[in-house]
Length: 444
Image (cartoon, rainbow, N blue to C red; front, side, top):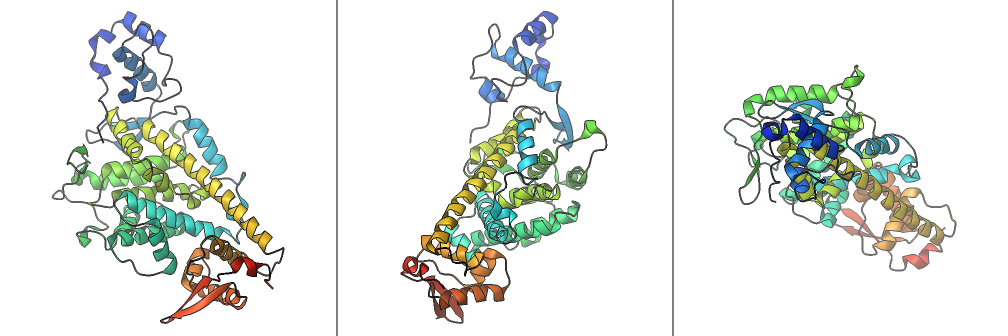
């Protein structure tokens, strides 16, 4: 990816220092956005400036407006300059949507508010996030194979599968620690979990990189995009990051919206790159921890990495725009909020699709009430995947139930002739019967 163009140094342009020039610029430039878009210089230089201004003057006017509204965060760059952001449109609207939708119960589909069915979608989202986050960091395997590994409980066959399994187990763990304060030890533990048995040097898991371990962010051609802070600063920087993560402002002027705080955490750990490897996965895990800690429970059911994977260049550019333009986090915040909006929409679309499938199955069952919700879900899946193999372990994992409950479900379906049992070694496997559609009408 090509680096974005560096903005002009507006603080050092002498011709902008006389009052008449500044008055002309401010008269022509009305605010911090261009057509409601928060443009970086890389894109603004290609747009048409207001009448009577050149691009440098236009940029200078926009920066004057932005600087008057910036809010600083404790994160500093390698030169000690603070990162900052502002509430550019549509950030307030997106935050409002998150408060209503991700933390409340407004228009939430029944599948994830109903205790009887929520576990199915909870496990599915964990698997999806585990796969996509690992693929962002180089894991090479198909979604189908990865889902089969997790659902059946078989051991991972290679490093890519191990990365995915680590992410899945870490995401499950985050739900259990969401009420704990962030500490260096907790961050180290998350890093150990996501990198277990995947690092070239196993001893680098759960510790800071050293001065001898030179870490940069570059591409396959060796072009360097980011040089993280010196290893000697990492202890103090981690302390400040944890303080920021745990902070609750008592002064209204110091308030940081919880979603923005979570997004800044994602950026902060990525910027500091405190580990030899696994920084991206740890940063995204921290984002989820922070959102869940602030009671945005819907985040357990969405995958941000799925969206990021489909637009990796925008993800990378959001980091570069921020560093490239006076540490302006607004670019990264806007990008991340859009990712969350799309992830929530995908969840709603998926649940609508599943609802329709379930209605079709219930129609096939002709109104009988002899199957529980887990069995109906399996039959629904079997209708769409006639060659699928089911095991007690896969059924147990999919619905987050104990082994004996999963076993009884499958045995009952086999007795009804809806799935066919077959013993392979010591394990029983089940597959849909070839005439499942016909047999559904005769379920008793």
